[in-house]
Image (cartoon, rainbow, N blue to C red):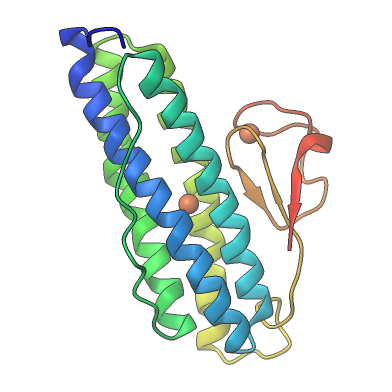
Length: 192
Ligand SMILES: [Fe+2]
Ligand SMILES: [Fe+2]
């Protein structure tokens, strides 16, 4: 393994933190999906599965850059604390909001200062995708709180996930290309 250049060490530390966060979000959302199905909220379960897939993509992207910079991608996966689906949606939203407002902006600033373009790119792609998750979780929370049984949270439904950056949408063919990373929409994965 190549030695880690001093100017890369802080960025690698941040990449590892992001890798751990995304890997644990994947595990957490997968567990939340099972609970949502059990709660009769199949649409919320679909959303958790779509976001879980996106977090897996983020983790893989971060891992690739960690390796490129001479680090080793490894982390601990914690057992997710599963509560009611409404509480799980709120936990998920809080995690996404932290990543969008605090974690990724700080990491992007640091990597930009050291001109580590590959790290800036993976952080930026993940941050933009997390914004779509935050929006969808917020909508789901509002519907569950309003007790809207006929709304999309109730029945399993399709979501579309960018295989490159994890951008997530509820609308088929929302764009011709991913608005974050420009991948053609026909390459998006369908998750239900
Ligand atoms: Fe997310
Ligand atoms: Fe994308």
